[in-house]
Image 1: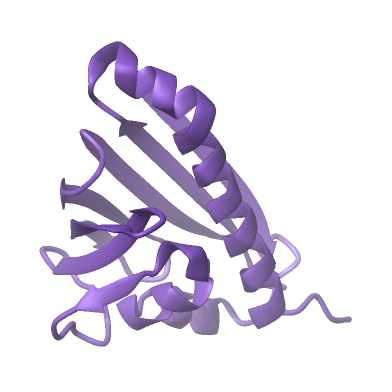
Image 2 (image 1 turned 180 degrees about the vertical axis):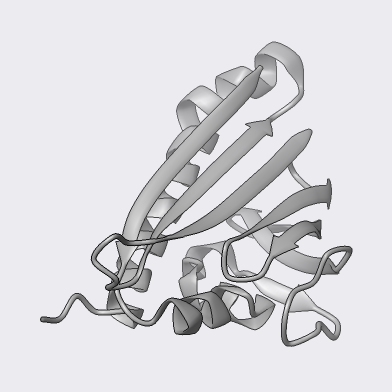
Amino acid sequence: MIHRLVREQDVLGAPAAIWDFFASPHNLDTITPSSLSFRIVGAVAPRMFPGQMIEYRIGVLPGIRTRWLTEITHVREGEYFVDEQRIGPYRIWHHEHHFIPRTDGRGVRMIDRVTYEVGWGWLGEAVHAVWIGRQLETIFAYRRRRVDELFPRTG
């Protein structure tokens, strides 16, 4: 079964600075909960580009780590980028990151759209219902808090 997760967040600050932060794969660790034991494997360019492959190791369960290889498939400078899983824990993972200028000129509306499928038939759906769905909610809630800390709502 295909699942969708959509999260929106106003991020205050200079749109170029916000984009620069999210366009660097090295900053992903900053907005990922430590409980995932997230680590980039190997060298990675300081700025993403279409066709870039990024390999990570993540903890999927306590003491169990897995390989996750994503490809940056689309980038429109300052507007959006898309990453898609090539190897990893999901059957399908398609994550769109959109950055839309706020009408008041004070930053961007950041929209994450994730389309994913767990795989493994009814067993995967059962695990999604009791664990994976909640884990994704926790990850994106953490990300929201960290982005608010990094780009404070002042003024």
